[in-house]
Length: 143
Image (cartoon, rainbow, N blue to C red):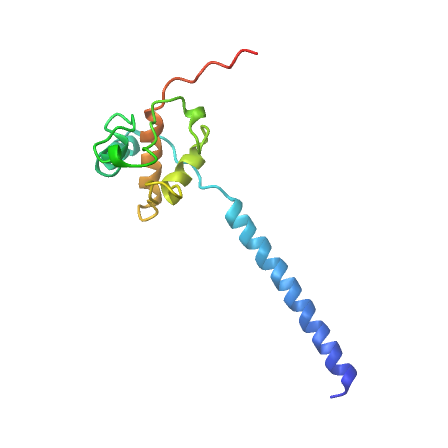
């Protein structure tokens, strides 16, 4: 093979690699950017969420979502109270997908662990349960 042939072959290989990287990045960025589809709220899903909440969440967040569960007393920072208006929640600001993300991924540097071991449907059931504890929406602040 002549020297020019090797250079041409290297250029072609480099072009193929660059194009492949763009394709992979495009595919992965679409997959990452898609939020999970919010399932329809059904009585069955709500009942499932209540049961899961009692088993997994109430010890810290309290039976009524007030953040005063028996295990939560010793936690620093204390568990989230779900009784304030949903749009005032620190990490979700009323977005159900963000509530789902907090349940799925947990919150770093807190006792809120990730619950990604639960099937997606069960995590959505928990979303509907915890947002059900939210207080009424606060009136807009007067200027």
